[in-house]
Every structure is written in C-alpha cells, then in structure tokens.
Image (cartoon, rainbow, N blue to C red):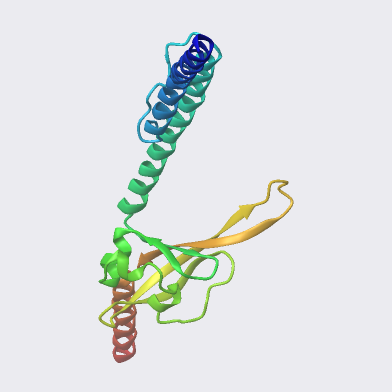
Length: 212
C-alpha cells in the first residue's frame, strides 16, 4: 500500500513539476511573441531583453536589429512620400496620373480647381472623360493643345504634356507600361492675348489699306 501511495505521489509531483518547468520555459517565449506583436512599422518597440541570457535572448536581439532597420526604412519612405505629395499638390499646373488602362489614380489641387470637382469625383474615371477630345493619348508627348471639360460643361484650353510610367523587370531587359503622368497648363490668358494681337494686327492692316 505504501508503495502504491508513494508511486501515486511521485506521479503527481512529476506532473506538477513538468507543468511548472513548461511554464518557466514558455514564459520568455510568450513575452517575446507579445513584444513582436506590439511592434509595427508605425512604432518600434524593443523585444530585448527577455531575461533568459541564452539563445532566446540572442534571437530577441537579432529581431530588434532587423526590426529597427525596417522601422527606419519605413520612416524614410514615409518622408519621401510626404515630400513628393507636397510637391505634387503645390504645383501650379494640373497633374493627372492614370493606370495602364486609362483610369485616374490621383490628381492634384490644381486639377480639381480647373475642373470644378473634388478629387474623389475624378479618381476611378477614365481620363479621357475630362477632355473635350476623347481620343486616348499614345506614348509620351509634349505641349499638345487640348481642352479640359469642366463639371459644368465649360471648356478650358490647355497645353498638355505626358510621360509613360514603366515597370522594369528584374533583369532590366523588358519594360511594361504601368500608367501615364500628364501635366496640363491653363492657356486661357495666352489665347486671349493671341486673339487681341491678331485683332490689333488686323486693324493695323485695315488702317494701312484705308490710308492708301
């Protein structure tokens, strides 16, 4: 009977000990996992130390090193994006970016002001829809006269330039068109000045003829 009780006690003690040891082993792993979960591209949180001074500690240090690099690169890319967006939206000329199928991806403030509609109203539309001329542009082009069609149906003469965006393959031996960037300059004032100049020249010619 004593042997049975002793064996039972040994089994119970072994189970309790195993559970305790398992908990102690898994605790730093769970701590590391929780720290990894709380780390992101927005905020960097160090995973070390985990308090084990073993291979797990080395793993946490290695993760911190890589996570810090990702975080710093993420900050750089965010700053570059903000800088580029600030330049685009402060441009005096209208800018339209479309995908390869001709659907508008983004526009700047000058575009929305000229067309008299919000950015959300333009994104997703065919870019041809904002022009009087409905033909689709092919390839890159420069200083082509086109006409914007505003939301109210008003026509605005513009000088349009465009450049094809390319996606380069890894071996750099082939390219694929991925979109089009267009810049439009409002030339209404120039058109008015041209009209006045032609009128003045015409009147000058009439005066010369009348004078004999």
